[in-house]
Image (cartoon, rainbow, N blue to C red; front, side, top):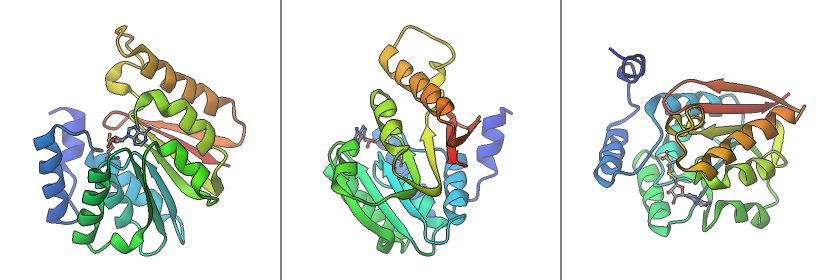
Length: 205
Ligand SMILES: C[S@@+](CC[C@H](N)C(=O)[O-])C[C@H]1O[C@@H](n2cnc3c(N)ncnc32)[C@H](O)[C@@H]1O
């Protein structure tokens, strides 16, 4: 059995709603985080007393549902281009009794949200189009609370990051530049995790 499959098989979903959302994502061929990543998000959120979580690229809320599992209090801030996705996110979080955690939802380019709020965050989760990663990382790195962290999904970009197949060059470069940008910033501890499509963690020291 493949290592990743073994890991996925060990996951116990917090409620049947998670399976419902997965099935819906599959039916639309819509990319959502893996359950392994979800479990990490849940754990990271649980480290903070009043977690301030900002998602850039919420889709219809699957990653937010995992964050919410690790939160008894705190704030979830969602961003997505799609109004329909954000509405679904409210519905799904409602189904697991966690919609009260949603403090704002921004519809439009996630990067614009930083101009609309003066809040800072404990966790900024980045799961948007890869072309925007570098710009997102640059802004997010200035908007963390002490002890805060950036979590970047799709670090491997389906393998393109380390196996240059000549396709989606700009997305690949944006991810590589994001890694370099964070490595050069002495304020951060960096860690890269080999689960699913790869996670990059950058936590303030
Ligand atoms: C991979 S999906 C997010 C999945 C979600 N994080 C989850 O795991 O449940 C990416 C989402 O980001 C949105 N998106 C991509 N680029 C964006 C941007 N610059 N601003 C806002 N939303 C963006 C897309 O509309 C899409 O819904």
